[in-house]
Structure formats: C-alpha cells, structure tokens
Length: 452
Image (cartoon, rainbow, N blue to C red; front, side, top):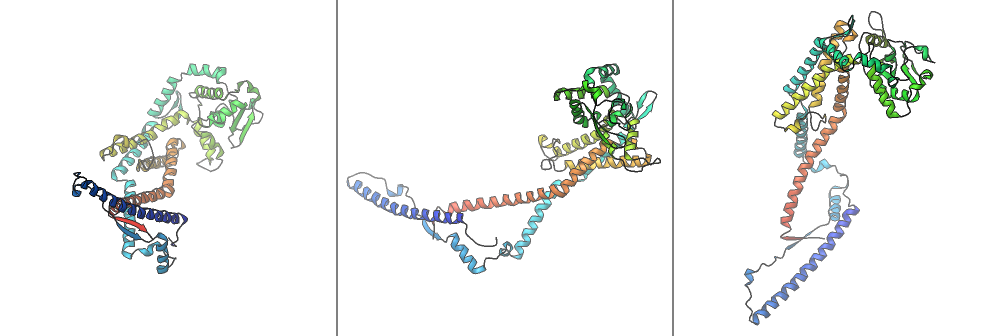
C-alpha cells in the first residue's frame, strides 16, 4: 500500500452514495408531509364521531438520526497531507503488534508442520514394513539358477513360476507359437533373415535385444513394428537398429487393434519359454555401455545380459514384486487403522490416494518403508557381489518415491504451507468482516449515514 489514490471504481461508488443520500433526504421530507396528512385525517375522522385507536397502540416508525461522513477521496487527501504518499504497511503497526503477527504466523506454520510430521508409530509401521519386505525377498524369493529341472530360485519364486506354467501349459503355448495368429515381424532369432546385422542376435538373446518383446515398450515398438513390418532392436553393443523384415511381410497387420491383439498373443506364447520375456524396460540397459565392474571388468550392459541368461526374466520380476507389494499393503493398512483409531471415518482413512491434503503422512511413510528395504537389498548385493540379488521392482519403487519426496520437499510443501497460512488468515478475516457487518446493521437502525 504505497500511495493513497482513489480508483475510478471508488469514484463511482462515491457518486452512487451521494445520489442515495439525496434520495434519502427527499424520502424524509416526503415522510414529514405524510405524517402531517395522517394527523389531519385523524382529527377529521374523530370530529365526525369515529372511534379511532389510541396513538400509543399504533406502531409508528422512528426517525433515524443523520450521520455525515467524509468521502474516501477526501480521507485519502487528508492522509497524504499528514503522512505523505510513500508508506509501508508495517508503519501502521507498533513493534508489539508486528511481533505478535510474526508469532501468529509461526504458530500457523507449526500447525501445518504438525499435520505432516510423522510420530513414532508412523515411523515404526514404515520401518517394520520395509524390514518385512526385505526378509521375504532374502528368504523366499532368492536368485534364479539354471538346474536340471529348469529355472529354480527361492520357494516363493518357484511357486510363481509353477503358477505361470499351470495357467500357460507348455503344449498349448507351443501350438500357439506355431500358429499364424501369434507370428510377428520382429521375432527374428538370428541374422539369417535381417538386412542389417544385429550384434548378439541369437535364440538366447533375441528377446532381450528386440524392443517388441519388452513387456512395457512392446506395446509401443512392438505394435509399431507389426503395423510397419519392421524389427526395432538395441544390439549387445548398444546400437539402435530399425529395419524392414522383408521375409516376414506376411506377419504384418493394417489395423491397430488387430496389431495390439497380435502383440498380446505373442507375449502369451513367449512368457513361459526357457528364455522368456525380459523384465520391463530391461532392454534399455543395452544402451549402458559403461562401467568396469567385477572380476571380469564388465559393463552394465554385459552384466544385465548375463542376468537375463541366468533366468532374470519377467516371471522372476513378478516374484520379486511380491515383497514390494507387501511393503505397500502393510504400510497402507497400518496407516488406515491408525487414522481410524485417531477418530477419522473409514472413508477418510481409506489409503488409496497419495494426495497429501487428504492423506498428509502416507507418501512419506511409503518412502521410508521402501528406502529401508532398498538399503537392505543394496547391502545384500554388496555382500554377495552377485547382481542377481538386485530386487529390480524394489529399486523402481524406491526411485518413484524418492522423486515424489524430493518434489514434495522442494516445491509442493512450501506452496501448500503458504496456502494453508493464507486460508487461516482469510478465515479470521471473514469472521471479522461478519462481525463488522452485524454491528453496522445494528448501527444503521438508529443512524442514517450520509456522505459529504
């Protein structure tokens, strides 16, 4: 508030108030004339013998006192004459009032922080969930190994693999793989049918190199390849190649929905093979031609290729996802039960949404739980020096919640805290304005306000 100037809107308001004041004066003059006429009529009727009620039994309007106030423009000019036009808002407050305002703002911010602050029970729930997930990963998931009976790992991983074998029987999948409906143009197992050589393309590694076989990227690159009759790959040296597959031209589709259906059917036929589908986004690691890791000084791409060869595939990825899901379930259930115990309704306590205004502590608790499990998994890998011990889904969850937590701390929390403070101030301001309106209404019963 640097200068006291009247806007055009304020001038219009002043004009309206002046016009209303003149009308009110005219109304009072007319009221006097009406009162005089009524008195004369009463005297005439009484003279004619009519029995009229006593004046004390009649309700007569009381005449309001007139109060004249200065216009806003006049007040602005007087203020400029006394204190000038260059003033800070703080100058209208005393030092004690400014200190009181700072204290009030500090208390409101502390209220906001208290809403989002984890107590010892929240931390305990998160830590226990993270440790539980890590224990399940270590004892029940294990690492894949190729044995005489095929791929083997921990009891939980073996159960998941057996479940996939049950719902996708080998005989039926073999028939499906040989049928025309599942054939796709990007499924070359070696370089005999390619025009551009793809390094590393073989029966063992072709699904890792072809983006169409990726469980996530396949719905983009695989469907595109089916429509265009191409094969898109990242070879073992990190080179991206996209080429027309002339020998597989009959495997293409012209309708996008037919292409999506063929992509899903092809996934189904490959999922339980000895060298099955890679883990989601695993094909992109072929681009990481860097590092000198371990005894053989391998790059990251070479390590991932070796992991896939040992059985680190989509089914093992599903088994590794179970400890990560356990962490999610335990933390969300613990959060919900605690909220209900604190007096919140069941609807308010359902922990599906990560909206921090509805569930202020939930995402932070999930971050702590997944951080604990990831730290334990990192320690396990460092101890065993075996990359097959890496829990890929757990690291993905950790990356997701780390990003959201960082974004919350740097961007979202300050903005939400400022909004919380402004809402609190606005609530108090509305209450004050309502009290002023109520007082003015009572005041206007006895006084008629007229602007100069």
